[in-house]
Image 1 (cartoon, rainbow, N blue to C red):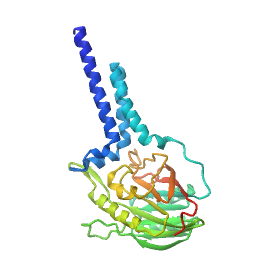
Image 2 (image 1 turned 180 degrees about the vertical axis):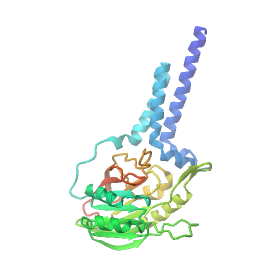
Image 3 (image 1 turned 90 degrees about the vertical axis):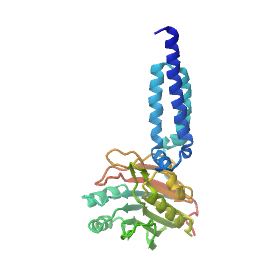
Image 4 (image 1 turned 120 degrees about the vertical axis):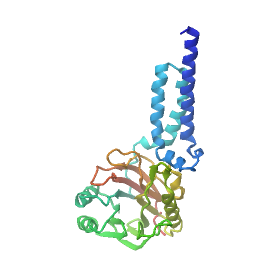
Length: 322
């Protein structure tokens, strides 16, 4: 190959890498530019948005191999975008405060064969509140018995429940059932937690599952359930609200916008929770209104296909008052 031809080939490869870097930065900065129809591709991208950082890493390696200054400069764009979006999650959490609540959220799985061990593991983290989903008649008594010594107060509606060190009052189901589901389906509850800092409205929810298949990202029922839950939270009269649940979506997914637009999400930590064997996304969420969700992290695996997550919630002075 002639010298001139070789030089043009190297420059062309550098231009391709630079274009890919710019495209990656664009997806990171403007994921909502990707339409949700057909197949809810936008939501699918947002579910795995942090993983675009690996694309930038791969492009960096190729740019070094190609010795392309153009590509290396272009890679500053996705690096800056990723750092802006997710860099703060890597910072250490704030020190515990006087008005903190520690919570645990866990989809315990209806196929979990070690309910007692799961309950002991969750209680061992020392939280004030434990939210559980996929409770079934066979395992519910086990959770009640195992958690009772440290969590004398609990409320269960359908397949979701909340265990608390503080008294619970005013518990009721929250209707988040999407249209088209005819079988018995109760996956939401609301209760008042009587903390020393004032009353807090706690919601526990399990939104419908999503699937990735030939038709794309099937999340319509999840999205509808999120809208119903968002309306319930918006109508809540207590100022401070805590939401715990398996929402089958990440906080970047536009399908959860009815919730994330109204509530604070964790400021520190990735806490990828699903699947437990090789976590790819955090679909187990802790959100709050009139309170700050500080660091969130995963706990060791249980008998579930989800990892438990624990978070520290800092209440504002007087924020828990009606």
